[in-house]
Image (cartoon, rainbow, N blue to C red):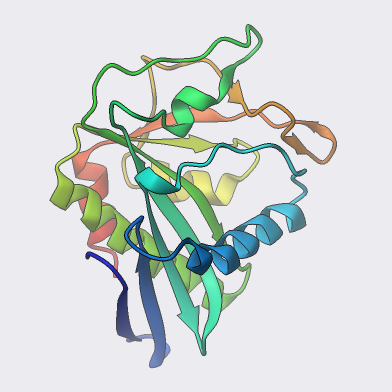
Length: 205
């Protein structure tokens, strides 16, 4: 998928049509505004505070799904290059405040997962996740990482039930400075999403 891409999908269970969209740095950044606003609102509703973020747009691929032109789910993959850090390297280790550094360039970070807590939102999440997983398989990354808040049991199950594992190499809990969940520092666990896990997720639709 290069440039603007919209894919129409018929969902067997509901016989409803969703539109899958793809964004990368070759497109107008203004297109990202409603996508990021949606994600920010979902996290706000979940109890997360606003915090300063790093602009990773030049290395990001966004997958998002709409229903009747209304965004239902978003997520992105950030690819590691010589010119950027991925979220795993941006977060700080708890409690030391140090950063992880990744030497392997053929890796990526799956993040910014957000979707409405509705039947439509759950279905849209599934669509976006399968397509993002397939993209990762096509790119043949050595590893895909993710950050999971243990408080979000539902999202944990999506990854762990499909074979994702807590990272042994990057085992410390991590945090974004200033990111609070219900007034307390939000801590995340780094997970590893290997090829077999990506294959399982990609085959779910």
